[in-house]
Image (cartoon, rainbow, N blue to C red; front, side):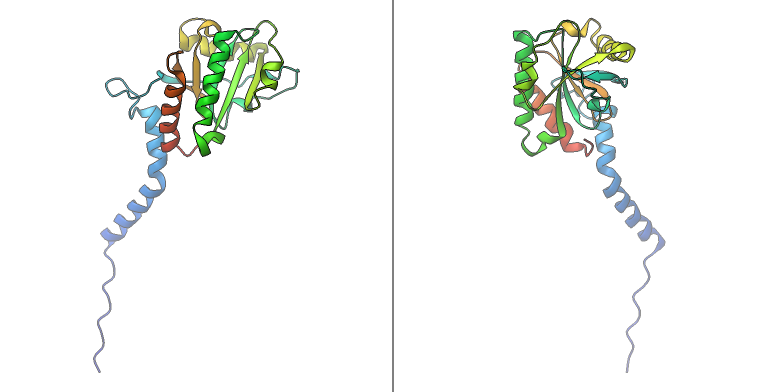
Length: 207
């Protein structure tokens, strides 16, 4: 009775290749997401496919004391953990400000199932905003930056804009780690935000 020869043990090189493949499958998406907005895949000069204006390098937003319009403490986590559409305003939200808030709402809704990964934030400083603004817009967080930390937060936007951001009329995209990544003007805002956000969410598993 003949005995079948035992199958040869896999070579050390074959085992190493398998380990490398497994490592790539696990870390590959994270590396791609990192390169997406820190290393420049589609977001650097010469190959820029983003509609927004890239802040290069990205600018970390400092932790800040934020309060709701009724004075309740919001903490600093409002600016962390999700992708953010941030609109800045001074006092009451004028027609241009309302248009930007509407466009960010439309972009978020059009994300479908990924809408929960995005938070809309209206940062207001100076003057007295209309309390009805947030009451009628349930997915919008209205917040006041306060104290030295609030001034440092607004200064980060000013530095990115190269002017006072409260009057710049821009919308900002912030990543879940609190980094200011992209800025947008008013032209075709909904489509620009939507396309850039879809691309980022596709390659990123954070937020």
